[in-house]
Length: 347
Image 1: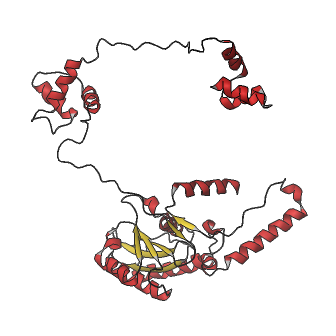
Image 2: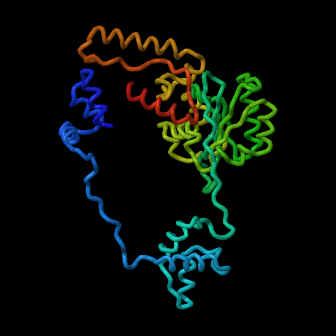
Image 3: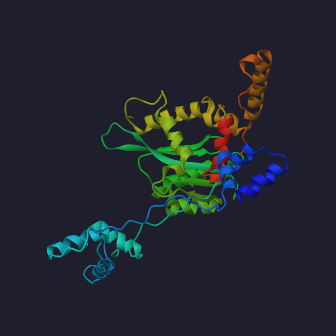
């Protein structure tokens, strides 16, 4: 077949070397194939080796019979082999038991223990504007009492990274979360069936009071998989920014009011002054209010003017990508992730 394809390509004017490269062979191999009459594979393959110490079919059958006896059917090989040794019986090693059981489709959880349930990845969510997808979580703030922490409830807009609501309490309850989401929706005039609220699987997030509030407000809940922090990346990144900012106190908070005052000042700085890397280094309030488009256009014009004034500095390359992004994905599908990575490399 390869010879036929190369001949057809050569007949219409293609070079033989290039045709061979596409097929994946060298031109010398092609010439050898053309001169060969039989065209059979003459490579020597090793004959299957026989091992004297390998288990016989009778021994494999014995392993299956023993493993399914009433006293052993609920035990793994690591338990069966020592018990047989206590009786003065040796059939094979644990690994041999495992191989035989696997070959006969019997290598399952033995006993009443159930396998861990498989949790599907959360449904991909895309935010095309503010107040479409919110993400929220709870983090600890240290107090000056050993072993006691304040809880920061924080809700952010996925599209703009704008902190839309927060509260600090002494404990974690679904009631606190319900009050916060209710107040935040009233503040930002969120209508029914407008918003998706994403969170992890903590008890305040899935409490009956919280779910009842979401249903009353017409908000669709979305939850991360258990013990998978990457399913809620925006809130996790927000808390890292909060705790690693230069203004974060070096000593624990002495009171609840002190913690609330500090979070209030941090929120004002974050929303109004912090140039966020995930939204092309504009502030969250600029992105939330739609002012970032004009800002990014102005940056593009400044870069174009600089390139026109000194084109040698760019060496034929494009200017920095300041284009406005209309979509922000939460738990994107694989094809969208691959597309985003390719765009980053181009930028």
